[in-house]
Image (cartoon, rainbow, N blue to C red; front, side):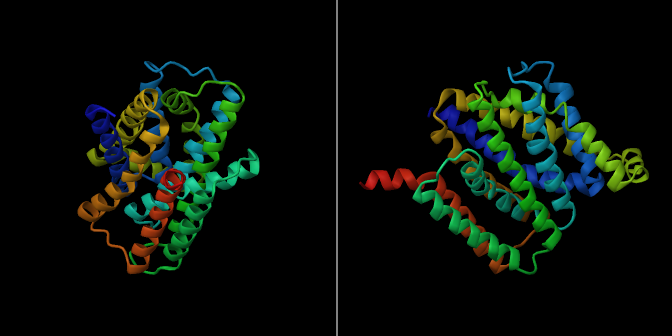
Length: 294
């Protein structure tokens, strides 16, 4: 990859990693479900004006929006609001790769390689250690919601595979932007139901510059810029050369959460995080390493 493309991949990793700190700032002033509604509304309003609509039926866009949009981000935003450390959330969310393997086997009849099975076992051990760890300001509710966010992300990955198998071209940025038209209303409805209209009104009446900056970053930074550069890189290079850069996002999240939020993990959480990320590394690079040794 040319240096300029490597630099852009590093920017994406940094933007996506710092995204977790921004979520923490965002939910401190805005109820998490309302924050989700604002984020997707801004993406939709800004994005559909200049991103071409993907040639995908609305039924597929709806399923993708409900899994990737509502399912993942409702759970993630609420998890961080209800006691999941931002840096640790970025690590646990990476378990989506292994839930994707399980879902692909169940619904697409795709069988994982031995390296992927080993990675899955390492990740499961890591998740178990993080789950039983105490301290570090992690709540059980936050941990469970983060797992559910990973499950929803994995489900959306399978939806993308099904869209491709149905013969429709998948363009990541167009898919993300146009599917953003659908989540605002479900998010708003859930917010009014679970968070209360009075609370939402107070949040909007006292909307601070931190809240505004958080929404703008989530919409334009993490979504438009992040997926825009990522789509460009995927169009220029094989996925196996681009995808490994996403492994840097949890590292950025952990460092920025430590520096800006003062988050510190317990020993068990540290070990569990290392095991989970090691499983992800084995999942990405294991098959190629085995092939090179033969």
